[in-house]
Amino acid sequence: MRVVIAEDAVLLRDGIARLLKDYGHEVVGSYGDASLLMESIAELNPDLAILDVRMPPTHSDEGLRAAIALRKERPNFPVLMLSQYVEERFASELIAAGTAGLGYLLKERVADVREFVEAAQRVADGGTVLDPEVVTQILARSRHHKPLNSLSPREREVLTLMAQGFSNSAIAQALTVTEGAVEKHTSSIFTKLNLTPDENEHRRVLAVLMFLQAPI
Image (tube, rainbow, N blue to C red; front, side, top):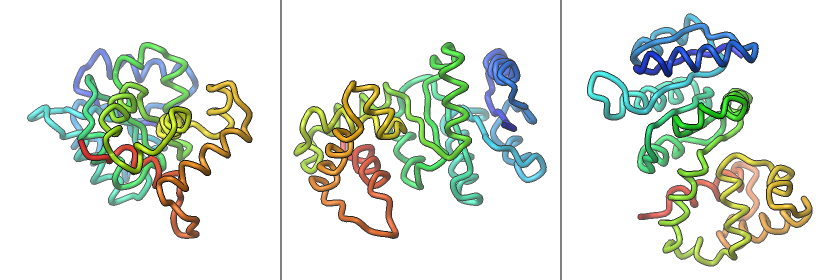
């Protein structure tokens, strides 16, 4: 996996680069601001971009804007966002354009090296990885959204894991149930959220988007 990194905290940037290399991945670009990363994409052609949400010069949303622009130019280009705190608005705005090849993690997750590297690989492979804390906060405020309010506690658990990028088999393992049981729960979720089969849409992604974009 070829990776480019944009993170203005030098120690964290170097630390991420080092641990990725330790796991056999190649860091082809490492930058202190998002604009330099954007300029390098066409030349370096990486498999994954890792960006901090808040970067110079204003430390507001430069990394987020760069990620949105990058995925607009290159649909579903794998991007893993890092954030110091849970920022639901930023997460929802990025996710609105599509969840394939997308990750949003709190920086503290980097401390769990194996989990972080596995998350990076999952995003590079086209999967979705959302920090459990982000999902928990979004779930808390989504309880007042009527379609979601119809879900049972177990269906909420399943949808929460879906939003974190878990497959049905991974959900079954996490909840200690059969994969068949998970399939029944997902089918019920789709029905309650009025998501009918459509060859042009992925109901799993639509369910997650409804979950993440529920009004505050």
